[in-house]
Image 1: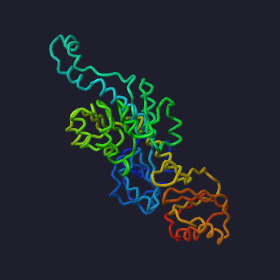
Image 2 (image 1 turned 120 degrees about the vertical axis):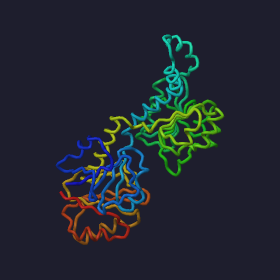
Image 3 (image 1 turned 120 degrees about the horizontal axis):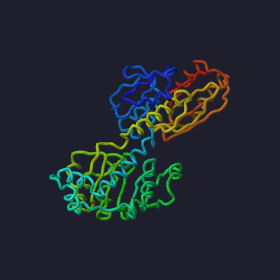
Length: 387
């Protein structure tokens, strides 16, 4: 029986992939094999020594101490794309709300008095005239799961679409409409877009991705949307171009005090993935990835370990998380040879400084093999799977 700790309330959809005959889901306790988290801050938590994995039911992992997990051989999963449709729809709503002046229009209608409200509305509607999306140019920065959906949706409503992502994956490229134009540089996108939507993760390299130098290149009257992360756009610089009218409106899902004090800001309370459908999709995806790792050693959508897809096997399996150093695999196979153990097959994958090796063995490993493997300098975690 595996014990999975829920650090937040999680959709019951997790039970579809974590059946009760094998998994015990708990809300409290200090001993558990893995955990599922949404927004809870994990940085100050003390993890059990034998913790195998943390599954984040969402895309961002800012609330998880990634370096600490990597050093301790804890696989961290996220669920990219599981909430993509919910975010895409909110981006489209944000574009419509901003471009058609819907919020001030609704607020104005609410304060009308008297029996001739319709007549007053007809007379005053000229104050809220907006633009149509059709024929305008949408620039999408970052073509991951959400960015691709946003780009395709913008094209579907009649917009010209420019996409910029020098690191787009083959999988996401397959999902992108052929009608989306490729920007060879960020400047090209900034200079030609009527709307700019940002969809990149917040990393050291992307912090303040858009600041004064970039904002100096945008078209006057552009509408900027940020449903990715706070910190991607430098707030002080953005407020300056909002005040002088260079940027007509800023629509964001990440309000802070400084941006709320600027004019022409439309801020939502982080509603991007706040739909039952998104929460269920994230929960199912997190649980599925967690189970596949716990039972088979397969790693998919990890933010700190190499991807390694392995199928269930009737062999005796051992997995090793280790530093990506020369002769690591050689030392492991030498131990097997010394114990007269035959390797049926193996997979070795690496990611930067971390590597992951899976051995399928013809015979069961003695305890001494696990001990010797764990004593190799650079080995972080050894797991032996029972048949």
